[in-house]
Image (cartoon, rainbow, N blue to C red; front, top):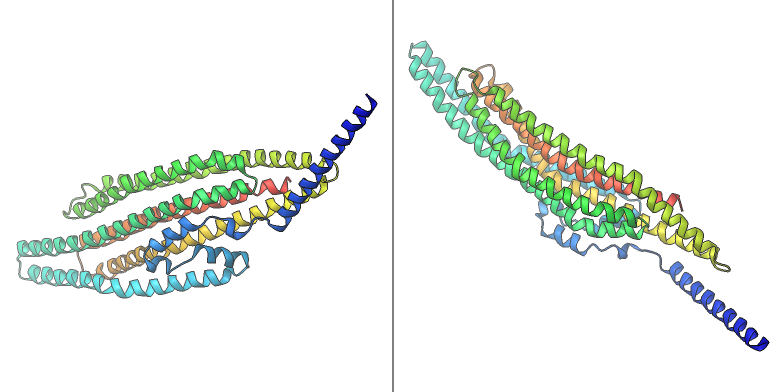
Length: 387
């Protein structure tokens, strides 16, 4: 009986030794191979970027952007973005200045024709000439504005598609960094929010922008003010929809970040405390866990910063197009006001204001996704500090 107890103790000690040895071996392997940049799956992201127009991304590599950020060379990436914005700004001015100049020239010809008609007492000829000029300007403005609506819809769609290919890899990096609860809970809502944003922007707001411009043009066709209140109501409805959508989605992410990140932190801290209680390997296990989790958080934050920069690259050229058109329309309205009919000036001002709303739609989509990534990066950092 005594020999059996000694043999049992021997085998238990041997099993404990083998367990500790295997644990230390695994710990040593983990120390040698923490999470690296190559562990972030960016194949789908790069495939999507390669499918875009080179004017938007210029052959941008997501992996290269991550490496530049990790190496602390953020100035190089921002310098390239600034150069793209500067080049796009002057290119759009050269492209659209002639078109806006033609509209101004047509309005001046109409003003001269109306002036001569009034001098010779032919009021009907003057009014007819105004309507001819107005309808020509209406065709030009509608064609230009509908093209701008298409540009805004395309960039909003591309931003959403980029988020769809980014989020699976990004939430995997969040889980890898110790944010399993946050990744599981927020992933479904974020994909749902992208679907809602796409439906609202592409299915509601952009079609309403076409209606908005037609109301502006139709409202200024006659001297009486008949539908300006309807136009203003539509404009306010579009802007309030953007603000409400932004507030709900960002507010949800902020609230979830306050709660779920602390749950992840508590879970990680408990796991580390249990690992540190193991005799002989506790201190090493805790240090290894912190090293692996720290490398995961580094990759997660680097991927988030790179994603925000890529979003800026994608939106830079379309935003410049819309901004330049808005500026040229406002400038044309200022030039036309002293000599042209106030209804023509009101049309140009309405088209410029419409481009401003399109800028807000694109800017809201860009800000919504950028803030979502920033909140996720900031909130899931708590899992490291609690460890």
